[in-house]
Amino acid sequence: MSDTVRIVEVGPRDGLQNEKTPISVEARIAFVKALVGAGLSTVEVGSFVSPKAVPQMTGSDEVLRAVQHLPAEFHVLVPNEKGYEAARAAGAKVIAVFASASEGFSRANINCSVAESVERFKPVITRATADGIKVRGYVSCVLGCPYDGAVDPQSVVDVTTLLWDLGCYEISLGDTIGVGTPKKVRELLRACAEAVPMHSLAMHFHDTYGQALANIYAGLEEGARVIDSAAGGLGGCPYAPGASGNVATEDVVYMLNGLGVTSGVDLERLVAASNAIAAEIGRPAPSRVTAALNAKHKRAS
Image 1 (cartoon, rainbow, N blue to C red):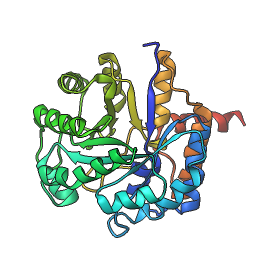
Image 2 (cartoon, rainbow, N blue to C red):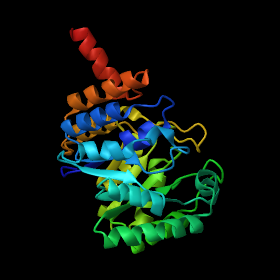
Image 3 (tube, rainbow, N blue to C red):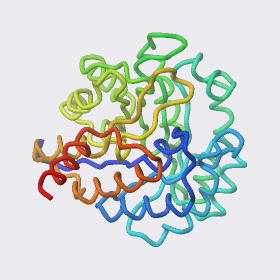
Image 4 (cartoon, rainbow, N blue to C red):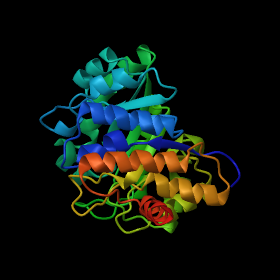
C-alpha cells in the first residue's frame, strides 16, 4: 500500500450538521481554512437544505463564497432543484446528491421511498451536468439500517449503479450506523465494483462499533482509494439512533502514515484545526489520535 489515498473531509458539513451547538458562519469559514491549510484538498463545506430542517447549515452560501479562492475542491450537499439553484448561485463547482439503500431510512430521513428520492434529484443531476458542475453521489445505510436491519447488498449495488448511470463521477458508500465489519466491507466493495470502477467508489464509515479503521483497511486491501472522514470524529446521524460520528480524519491519517500511504495531510495542523472547532462546540473532539497528541503536547510543555 505505497500509493496515494484521497481523503474527502466532511467535518464542516456531515460533522457539524449533527452537533447540537450551532457554529457561526465565521467559525465554519475558519475551520475550512484550517483544514485546507493542513493539506486537505477536498472538503465538503455545507448543505443547501431548508434551514428549518438543518439549522446548523444556515449560511452555507456564505461559507462557500468565502473559501472558493483557496487551493482545494469544495463540495456542497444539494437535495433538490431549489437547493441546486442556491448552490449554483453561490458558485458551487461540485455538488452531492444522496439516496438510501434502505426504504425505512429513506422514509425516516426524507419522507419518501428510495425510488421517489431518485426522481427528486434526477433533474438536479441533469442541470448540473449541463452547467458543467460535477456531481458526487452518497448511498446511505449500505451495511445496515436502524429501521430495516440488515440491508441486501444487491440493493446497494442497484442504487450505486443508478447513481453512476445518471452521471455521478464518484459514489460514496455510507455505513451510516457503523455496523459494518471488514468481511462485509470486502464483499460489498467487490459487488459494487462489478458495476462501478473501484477508483470511483468512496468509503464513508462511522465508528459506532469501533470498526471504522478496520473497515477502511479492508477496503484499502480491496483497492479502494477514497476515504470520507471528519476532523475530530464529529457528527453522527439524527435519523440513526445511537450512531456515533464519522471516523476521525486524524485517526485515518495516523493509520495511513503508518502504512506508508500518502494522503498529503499534515497531522499536527489537522489536530490544531480539530481543537479549534472543538472549542467552538464546547467539548473535546472524539478523535483518539487528537486526544493522544494533545496529552503528549501537554506533558512536553
